[in-house]
Length: 604
Image 1 (cartoon, rainbow, N blue to C red):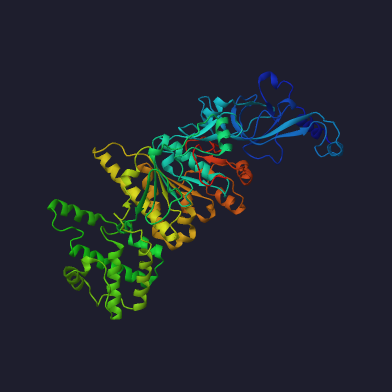
Image 2: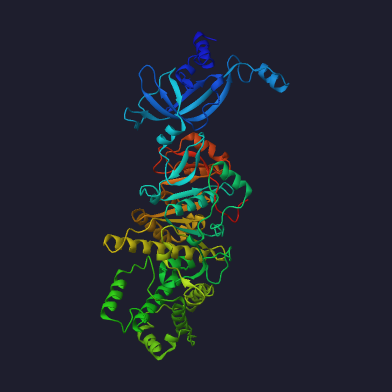
């Protein structure tokens, strides 16, 4: 061993004896040929090996230049013997044969630099590195919380590596929640607990929360948690066991479909309104080919003309003011976003049946009384241009069967049949939680149509509220949190390839929502099925355990700011642990998520 190597060994294995005197927990080491930028090695005395836990924040005061750096423990603490190699034959023999010999040892940390601390307390990108033998100080919980800036009124959990540093989200910061959130993780990693805690916290903060529940897991949020393990964990963190106030939680399910909590005090069946659906959304959801699309659009235009001729919309026998209002509504109508007012699925089916009958030279069976009436028959004769109508009976027959498939679901336009249309103004009341249970939808197409309808309805209602507010006609609209569970079922990359219009609609909602205080939260156990465009809409991330290396590697290129030490820990996170990154935080953190104070149906 050369003299330089001996001196290096002495420096690494014998921490400064004066460390305790100045309050430092350790000293920085010399750099090695393999050292990396923004990473510094710190050694500690034997008595202080376990003082600085992983992810703890430290301050390095470089000597003699006096520069101050903040860093996070990204590796260790490791324990190394002073005078022997850790894998030396002596230590191996003692460990395997039950000996009691324990040599003197020291600790080693790897610290990732967060920045250089300027005199005014702000952080700047470090231009230099701390010099060797600089003291390292452990930040207490109060200073750590101040530097992390993870405060807020919606608590998520505790920062790992600290005894009492809560991590929360500010509900009133428009630069945080409306920037949209992704909650990712494998099955059993703790996403449901995170979602339930987020919903409960948002409700207490006065947000209007709408949760699209495709598994029926959140239909009991009005009840406190009943799991003994959760009760003890909540008590250990001095958190209350409570559910969402019963009068503030409302449960909705599709008419004719079951809910996982039929005894909920505020349970309401609802019907979908076909007129709210863009014709392009319906065509994509039904998977129409080019020939069927041509016939659908022909029938749709014919139905619109019949509604006008029959005085259904725009209405006849109304005041001129109301008539002008309805005409203006049609002028503003964007059929890429919603359908023609008052158009029912049953009405469109009759129009398709008439077209099919003309091609097949048969007699159509009409169900709508208005079309069976003399006025309806005359309107059909006047409107229907046989020469312009596409032919081919098989295409008309397939279109007819696909629309009948939707109609047989018996969820469209059943207002008054034991159900009602959703009142989005009611949903968007401050402090109200609306869980829409789609667990019994049956067809994925139906669930997706319902999700698309709710998204569009909430956006319309929020934009109307904002226009009224800007015109001085109403108070500021509520802050809204819209949670989409199992988002991969609705927005998978494969599905978006087949339904580009639907995704563009979601994109418009997300972009407009940022300015209208409409916050989206996408929850999925399969982030690999979400296209980059969806994750690109999110600025906030809560990432639970993910084990697929390809998924983790893909997220590394999508989510910025998370250091390599946290990515390395992601596959081994325990249930309830998550990497949390929100716009108001100084850096992403490893967080132990609080147990849900309310009841989850599928909690293990």
